Length: 298
Image 1 (cartoon, rainbow, N blue to C red):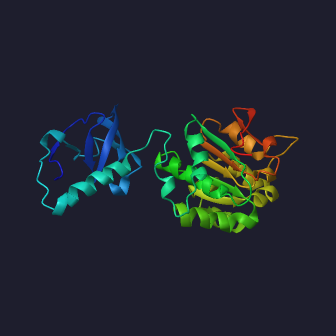
Image 2: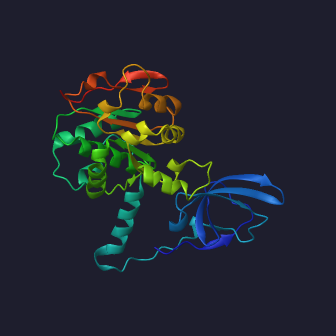
């Protein structure tokens, strides 16, 4: 299928696809501005996908709209309609699932056992994915968390991911997520945070530099400054490994304070603890109240 022809327009309408500065955009909103209009767009083409931009018609003399009525259909001359099949497959992969079924988690590089998909199915069936995985040692708690994270990423709900783990498990957790699920986690220890801070202005939060990060719980315990930066950052998914190490019986734990401050922003909370670590006493806070997370299996 050839690209649709274009025609120049003066005022694009919301929902139209336009070409500005050799990139394709979708118009979200059009407002009046001095000398013309202000056009708010979301990127569509590869270099600008996922970005938002504002264009002023007074400064952009060539804003073109892609007119679907002028699309030209051409026959597919490839063998066994390979080009058409690949195009339809690419469009299907870009579609966002909106059900509770497993779409990508089962394709990870792992010897899949059916029970390892149960936590993801249970969490996806809820309006908000907050879950405690409390299996025995060796049953694949990290893999179960990876399956759920993969599903949330496929649904466009996992752009910013934070993983908290004990120092001895950082490398293993990082390797598991990358080798099995192709999820890159940037390790932010004390040296890594200092390196980031040297690249950004003094008043900027270093935890906004990387969207997917893994940090040691011990680092947060030892340095209150890093913990403050972390509490002020917003995340889509928070994974806490060995969650019994961060539970504070007397006062609100870090997880409780973070969820109280950003309760509506966090899409998913995933806590991982052993079945013999009194997991029933662990809880994460939602909007100021502590709700125990259910054990999946005894």
